[in-house]
Amino acid sequence: MPEVIAHRGASADAPENTLAAITEARRQGADGVEVDVQRTADGVLVLHHDATPRRTTDAAAELADRPLGGLTLAELRSLDAGAGERIPTLADLLDAAGELDLFLELKDPWHYPGIGREVVAALAGRPAVVMSFDAGAVRELAGPGVIVGQLLAAAPDAALLDDIATYAELVTVDHRAMHADLAAAIRDRGMSPGVYTVNEGAEMRRMLDLGVDRIITDRPAVLGELLALQV
Image 1 (tube, one colour):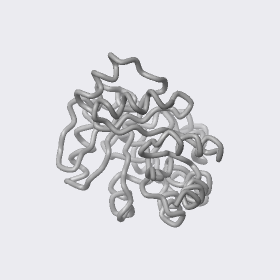
Image 2: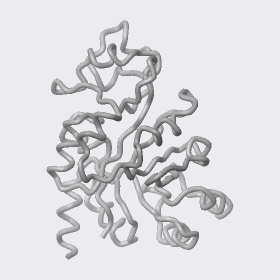
Image 3: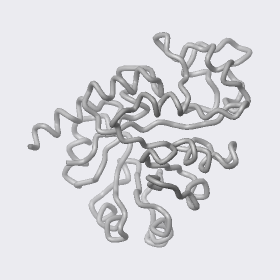
Image 4: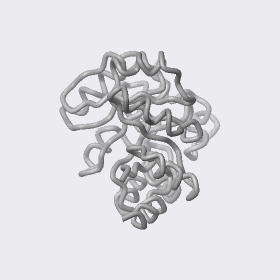
């Protein structure tokens, strides 16, 4: 059975990348959570997906379109991220995650030189997957418990997979690009195949048929129900 990974927490039912979404993911029986990590202007690692706070918060005009990395933690904490939730720090996540597996995406890492090493240091040995679409951000990462993952928006060719296999243990691909030959090619290189972001039952069933190792979804309870039927 694949791991059920809650995308930005259980984001279909709670504000994304918040502690409420993490709590809801646990309640829905997720095995792990995927969250996005950026860095504030004053050097704090926080959970947030977009380049600005406009879509995910109640930010007024003077803050809504400012780059997230140009805002301080205090400025971000002043915003409502949905249902009264605040933008959490990575430290908040580590305190709240409990037994959940962590999948930490370095979001737009070119804006935050050194963020990968900072995330590894902040983990302090707590096992986690650190991943990115940017190979350069994860290629050299190492640390106790750190598993390196590569995210891909499209199916890679053999040469790219060969290169990824030199530094990554996990490859997670847009579900629309995943097929049986690709899953096998990833495994043949000693890596673990996974997919994002699968929310519809028919596509969940297709991924189960392919035998991927993890499925990232906004709806972990729905995927859990399908898995229960497979037992």
